[in-house]
Amino acid sequence: MKFWAILPAAGIGRRLGSRTPKQYHSIGGTPVLIHSINRLLEIPEIEHLVVVLHPKDQHWAAFNFKNKRVSTVTGGDERIDSVISGMQFLSEEANASDWVLVHDAVRPCVKQSDIKNLMNQLNESKVGGLLGVPIDNTVKQLGDNNEIEQTVDRGQLWSAFTPQMFRFELLKQALSNAVSANLDLTDEASAIEAMGLKPIIVPGDRSNIKITYDSDLELARYYLLTGDKT
Image (cartoon, rainbow, N blue to C red; front, side, top):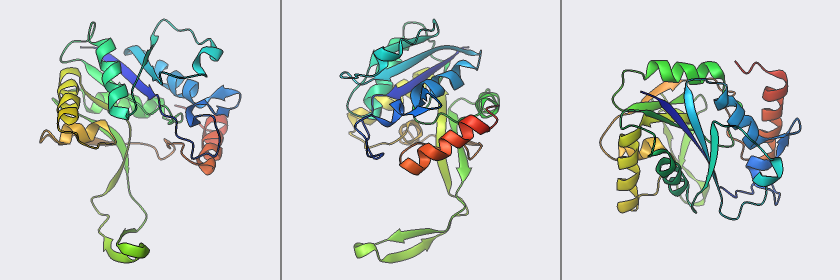
């Protein structure tokens, strides 16, 4: 049984107010994407990492990043298309029962201990799971005109993080089913859930933020340059 990893990095999200995709913004002189790659490479159990780039990516080549454990492929318009591209690349080497970890390219602050804990906690699982944290803010459900319809019981609500780790063949089938059913999914766990299965959430550290806005970039800079990566 082996561990493989996929980083979907084909997104062109520009909520940061810049022409540069958020995965290529620099923190301490290093692009967010490279920070994320390095966090996964620090886990020796991960055999190989596939970075999935946009077909028109104009940034990656400039970094001249070389590592024998890292390959690049091109992805599609949606996240699911990129993950499928990564899976296709790995299919020549990966076995059905191997594990594949899918990690957001814009989560550069994930801790080594969280990744290792995820791998250890799910080692005997037939399905897999993901990192996450309990929601601690009060949650409101809105109707029209931003009017509050109700306050949602947050007792069983968690925020889903990455990596999300599943058996290779199971995830491959789940993603194929999702495409066939034209499901609008935002993470891999949703595809697994659509098969009637129940992924496990493993508690992670709240510093594992997803960079979406300017304030996220500043917070990530703080965690990366002053925090403990382990």
